[in-house]
Length: 306
Length: 228
Image 1 (cartoon, chains in turn purple, blue):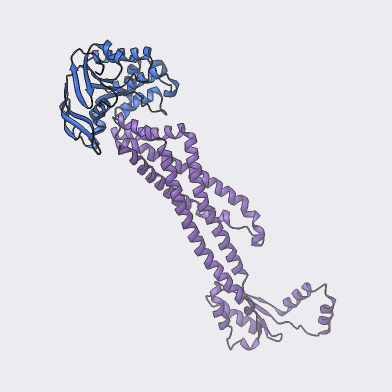
Image 2: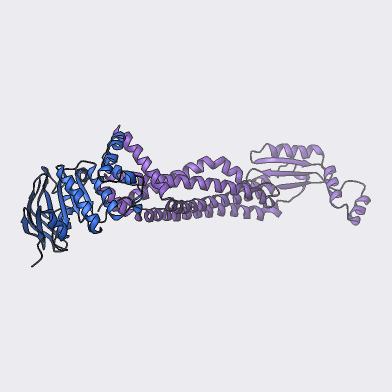
């Protein structure tokens, strides 16, 4: 009974203190929100960069140009062989006729090219096999695989050389983004921890006399400490709620507006924060609440020794 | 009964707050402890509520040796000694009712009992109609009466008043002293630490005079002696 009564009193005291010191509480919440926002903004930037890299990687492919007289069966055999490789995500054949049609559409306004084409009595273009790898690191292997004696005699050219630099650059960017993002998040998390710790210390410093009075009227250390610790947890949860709303609203607002950077597709922020929201809230809320509770515990302890 | 045997308090590095104090205060007594600033009055008060520990000697309160009282037992001691301070020491974020109730809450007293006791005590000190006010909304005299109410809720056997009228005008001082006399009449031992000569002389009760950390005089029906 006594434990229940004391627990209830501690919760009630924490809540009353929170509501009656609203300005101090709001100031503390503001700092906590800033700390959480800095971490979430970095997470968002990381998501954007990762999505951009993925989109770039999606654009990379190897186009294999077959000689114009190559029979369709050889092209289909090449497609079948390449598709059977686990490194290949997709392989598409553009037939010689389709290639010619696309070429004509592309140069419809150029009379010189159109008249040159009319001079020819047969289709000068061959079929094209477009291969997409699952990972950019797979392209060198795929190029090697194209040297298959069953069809390599029919290949006129491959355009991988044009993309090799891009592929390497994208791979570097991707790696840098991951490393830099992780370091930045770690640094911001550390700053946030220091800011949160000091904010709580300052908040409790303003209440040091109150702590002394509580002890003078016979409150045990645990009875004095607990409401402050619990109030810290209230502050952390309140900050988490505010941050969640702010981050999700910002993602909804920004996502379609960044479409231009992603060829009209949305930037993937909403999808990320929807899918990972609960997990992030649990981790960030847990870490923040733990940190604030620990800071409060330590900060109050300083005034309990007197 | 409060007993101090050869109690000395020396502050670092070598400042003597109290030197060889020997005192016995009987249950139900009204004792004034007087002396000039620096005489050791507040040090004595702090020793009685275990805010300070004696360097030497022994302190007993109601048969309880508090000389080396462990930190975890201090809250229990403070629930048995009512304390009144010059600067009130009220919790500013709590109402009058909550300030008084807090002293019972920390002791784990059931809520129903608190709801019975607090209004009674507030009535005794004449603040039953101001229970919902915050300390900042009260006069100095009213704040001191809240402190007295808070100190009474545990029905303490000893009430220690450290300069309770230091911040009050003459009328409020008179009211507070009358309230202390009333509390004493119900059997509570009152230890009044003060340097207010008029108050001490009007009481005509036991006066212990401290000077330079030592007992200079102890008279059963004494007066505030002017320093020679």
